[in-house]
Length: 197
Image 1: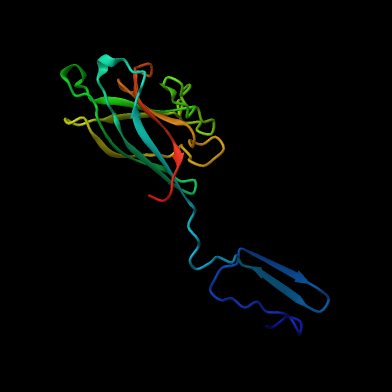
Image 2: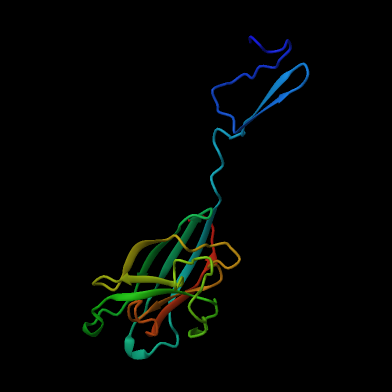
């Protein structure tokens, strides 16, 4: 190029923008460095994490409630993305006095069911979810006319595999909706690691 000393190193571009460019001038040369990020053509997707929870009736439940809830909750998460839950449950009491059909779903601190749902500890608190006052409160599930729940839920503040994630903790289903956190616990399960669903 005109005005450049003989022997100058001229950068060659291949259509990809460098992430950083540096020019150095010496007594005889102008040297231009371009730094490119090596991005694979097909990057490896984040690792998948899977968990499973087999719901059982609370062995210490008040007998007059007559719930016999059982079934499975499948849980998955890609990398640190949204946690997805797939619920397939049955056995909810659908008699007239329980016709509201809405039941709170909660995560509790411990996976200890030695005293039914009474030994699972307090509501789960996850300190890295500042926008959620009660991270263990997962809202309500709604059973149908036959006392079954078949639904999918998603939670962007939960994590399966972190140190303070949900593995080894418990899922609890309440008699009332999630606005009544002291409602009777009618079913629960321990969240365990699982193979791919």
